[in-house]
Length: 223
Image (cartoon, rainbow, N blue to C red; front, side, top):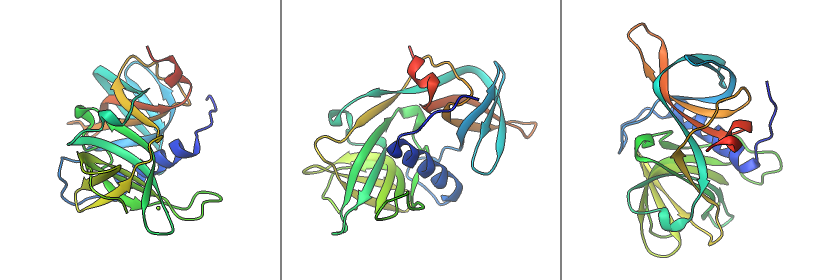
């Protein structure tokens, strides 16, 4: 298996998405999306094994398979009702400040929806949070936080992210990195960090036809 190093922000996004999927069970503004997050152990045309936090998960691959990658974007693409993931950090005054924003396509709405505090990262002054939901843009409120959800615009440089049982208001610096998650040809390889959307089959097994390559060697080979 190939080794790769995740950036601190991307590692934050990874652990945040996993936590949300394991803990959020209440009603949500958009339907929740089940999935498996982890590192690819092996992949064939018809199956994939993913090393997730609870253990290795084996999934059947159904066709057509859609793979997703990240491309550079900017805040102008965060519009009302966008579904986003926002990694943020809580400041001493209580304000959440965005460190990275991911914009998800319509077919991935509901991925990792919710908000939860994460285990503190090494040398971090405060714990992090992952929040997935729908965006609006009112005033600001930083502990790190990841917020995914549907976006709505408000005044100033803030985002209000709505999820099933609450909201997070996040201040957005002018230079915050923004990436768009978009469908594209990505060669899946062992060592990739991925999120596979899962669907139960009649035989009780899980299958996937949508895989988001978050980080790793294959992400650099997207067409």
